[in-house]
Amino acid sequence: MYSKAESTRGCERPLSARILDVELWDVRPEGIRALSLDYPKSQAHIEGHELLIAGWVLAEEANSIITLEVLHKGFLLKNCKVNIPRAGVAAAYVLEESKGNKFGFHCKLSMIGLDRVFDLDIQIRMQNGLCDEKKVKIGRVKAEKTSSFATAPAFQPVRVTALGRSGTTLLMQILTAHEQVLTTNFYPYEVKPAQYWLHFFHVASAPADFDNSAHPRTFATNIYKIGHNPFNHPHYTRQYPSTQRIENYYSNHVVNSLANFCISQINDYYHLIAEEENKPNAKYFAEKFKPNKLTAVCDDLYVGTKELVLTRDFRDMLCSARAFNMKRNNQGFGRAKVNDDFEWVDFIAQGTSRRLLEHWQGRKGLSLHVKYEDLVLNTESEVRRILDYLQLENSDASVARITETVFSERSALAIHKTSNSPAHSVGRWRRDMSDELKAYCQVKFSDSLKGFNYEL
Image (cartoon, rainbow, N blue to C red; front, top):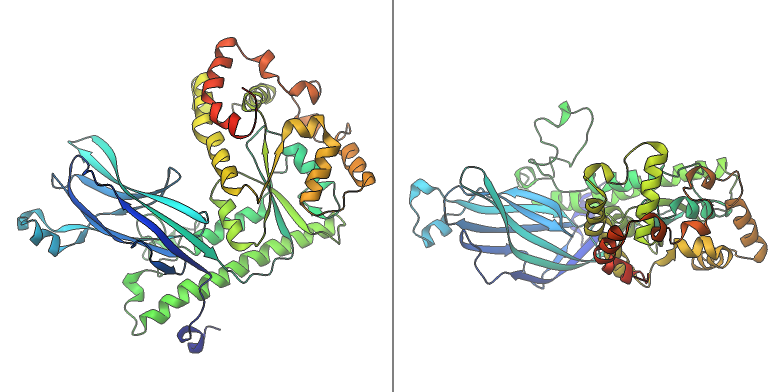
């Protein structure tokens, strides 16, 4: 029970942050007369997982501003209306009453799911004329956070962070062949219960957002979604005599309780898998991950997460995806979103391969980089290196047994492969691509290939 003693003592928050820098662009953007980013302040210490973004912006033309947007790694994290009265701004700039004085913005976002050190870009979405829109970046917030959730995991996660057609099925088979690693153990290893609960925690613990998530008057009518708790909002919390106590309840007690609930669900599921797979001494569970917010949520809730960042020459990956699409007569892996293979290269190079490289660069020293090429050409030595990283038993007999199991005719690789042999799958881009596409890939994938030590 959440007692008065808990709420009034100097309780430790499960997450805190220090604002390293707040940068407001010196050059005034076109269409903006004046602006201010009031919160957060540089070098401020934030107790709790909620970060306040507040300030005001005055446009050259009335009613041209649509929303303020907060982005993380290029992805929209939060948008909020610029509609809060700021009488002081109106007075300072001698504005007519008819133009109103709603120039302020005020929003809270959760730092759960952001990297340990993160940047937030602040931009204004504006409308020029009747239809044309533009987005103007006005500043950046840089911060460092610390997580200290008091959870009790029964198993530690092994994240297999990778892109499609880069060997994830092979690596998952290697992991599940070990008696101390749990997976759902059936092709294509895409059952991800831990990630559902990580996502649930990320959403359910976030501060209220009436515009983008659950609304206090309508949330009960949506029988398919939960959303943020709409009553974790200043409109409600400030009504109580003990406002600080209510805020502590949401930012400390609720967040910790949700964290423990979600970890308990993951524990229970993988206890069941351990029984099903007859692995009483299991130490880890393994799931496929993408380089997205859930990796950071995982790091928030688990201490010392193990991660295998799996890569494959992006040109071979593209060839494999193209062949697999033909095999199953389905345009997957982003191909349906573009018109031709050149646009497909752009789609991967500007999005997923770049994000994977950024993810790896931020976790060097913590994660283990595994190359598909090493897995298929030097399997035993690579299996031993992986088991050594995971601090699991890696005797010659164990490594040989795992290797034999993975490459047997009964394994999932027989279904999943698009080459005659594992060795034939390495460097296939030299055979399968036109000279024009090869040259295009060399330019577009240059940074990602170099970043993961592949030859151009």
